[in-house]
Amino acid sequence: MTLRCLAAIAIAVASLAHAQVVTNAPPVEPGAKAATVQHVTIHGASLVGNLDGESADRPAVVILPPGYAKSGTRRYPVVYALHGYTIGAEQWTHEIHVPQTIEGAFAKGAHEMIVVLPDSKTAFGGSFYSRSAAVGDFETYVVHDVVQYVDSHYRTIPDRRSRGLVGHSMGGYGAARLGMRHPEVFGALYIMSGCCLSPMGSNAPTAETLAAIEALKSPADAGTLPFPARAMLATAAAWSPDPKRPPLYLDLPFKDGTAQTDILSKWTANAPLAFFDQAVGNLRLYAAISIDVGDQDGLRADATKFHEALDRYGIPHTFEIYPGTHTSNVAIRFQDYVLPFFSRNLKFEK
View 1: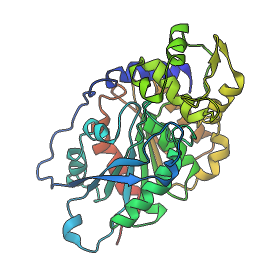
View 2: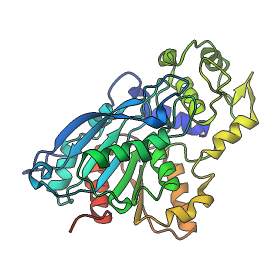
View 3: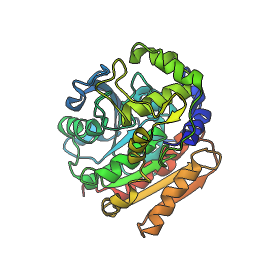
């Protein structure tokens, strides 16, 4: 994660820390049929025993298509949609205006599918969908625990070619990370304004920021910190956990204003553009990959780099820079681009 990336996210989502971000909603589609929204709790065996005390029982939102209740035996593909930093699954529903956008996509011709919004918000603001002794193994939680729960509780098509993965911002990072590492689980991949795709730089945070972090007595106290401090803690908890350093159980990449190269190397190892070359074979297994980002989004540069890396290896994909900020048109994109993309590229029952 670059400090430039931290700054870009801070500018893009500063309003998320204490209030709901306002996103543009598409017009209501005439004749759209009602989907069913269910709020469930999904236990994560992979999260049990994490050092920061994050709950292993996580909320999730499941949106069933209009025809689900009437079809009786019909099975459906599933799209897993990952939320961004500082928010959870519930706030994610408001930002992408579900179920309206899902109902609208179906009304405009997308095939019906199940959409699942798992939750990975932590005391530090987000898990980065990574494996960590500090906050828990959220990578395995999504690709195993959540998928297994959904397949066992709903009429899904339990096959990778009938599972899609999408995420926005931190969720876009999660889509890239999990997609690159788990093609055995998912068959189509959509990255929306993915953060943290590049390795980290070496500019130290302010002394005030480091002092505020050092003063914390528990992860729960992190909510009082300004955005840059919380973001650094979230990243450290995800990528440089340290079981020997209570009460936060993490190592920061700077000490007394000096970069800690061993910690920075751990952060670099978690940057998708750093391990991209090792994931080429996995990326080739996807039926389709798409990337989009707003033309006024501070994360545009990294999205472009990811697109260029796919191009270098001749991996088919689509890439679009559309008019908008980091969050302004995410709901419109979800209805008019994301769900139609999965409608075209996932396998449905005949």
